[in-house]
Length: 505
Figure (cartoon, helix red, strand yellow):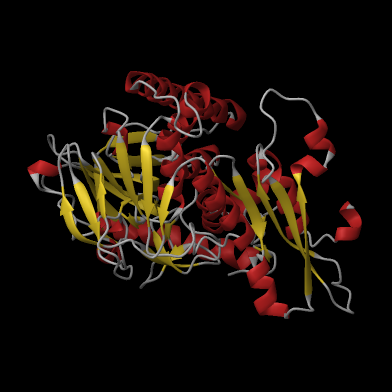
């Protein structure tokens, strides 16, 4: 993990010369490659694999630099909204028409309406972003071409895009950016292919197709997706039981222990049952009157739906990165050099991987979030086109290591920087301090609002204690409360600029 600012400004003249040599080299290679017998081959400056939010950001940036961009996307359209837009729409539905404690049951037809309207707005937002980019870029802007289909590498500078309909598109490229995203990880022990499990067993990607608010839902997993959906489905009126292997929710997410405790206390208070250290099943019985049996205790949990949300896995396997000289993917992700986001391999300086399809090497933490994926896209495009980026923005990007994070439980969690546990491990009991302030103890809590702040909503600062110049430096900020995601970016600035508590008190 990075602990200091990373400035991408070194050796610009040599880098520019190297880029020119590399660009001419790929053209020579491309001219020597025999085109596919099923498609006419053509050249582009940039090939983007994946048209989600991170791929769209890369496409916009490169197009504004005057590059000819092709985006290979199975849906045939760009969508600058994360996979999590589904959960955000359902969360808002619960806030608008449900109740946190499940006392109001929401008709799923309203969920379909919320999802449809959200998708339409996201598509319109995406189109507007590209229109604005064209206006800002002016002359020399080439609108990215979206090619429907899945791309796979056939060489260091060549790829095929196949939609499964008609002839595939053969492309030759100077630079490639892999942004294919991820899919829900599916445990092999669950009956995914059993007809009896249809309409009963879901993952984080398919839960939107459930078609109803279940009477009794078991959520398997303790990560952010599982925790979010436990809150969502409870607010829509379902009885929810969360089962997880971990002791606390969202372990491994760099979340402060006090926030984890507050989230779990809120879950129990609104009627969500939690079974920690019980994430494995000894028996699974799918169907409308289905159930699961906890391996740890033998407890039988009856449920008319099971959501297994045990993480996500990258989709890089499908694009055959070894054919381009890249190291074989691990758990569906590409290994990268975190300083540049270039793929690890032989002669792969022109191939980048960004977003939640990377496996190891990225210096941006935590992994798997839209904010970190966008930060990685900035690193990659600045490395690929240093002169063009410097000419457009006035300077090369300086990237800072700590990205603000928001988790859309109820209320919202947001955080940036070091946790109490991290600080204790790094500095010992006497080398750090922390202060926790509840919303109701601040001016914020005095303001009249229709829904008063909860007594458990708080902001916490973790800071350095020492005899040196770093005394009082803000190491981390952690918020559990309404509107937390709206001001965590301010906290991120304080952490990354190494501000002290004396400057903000």
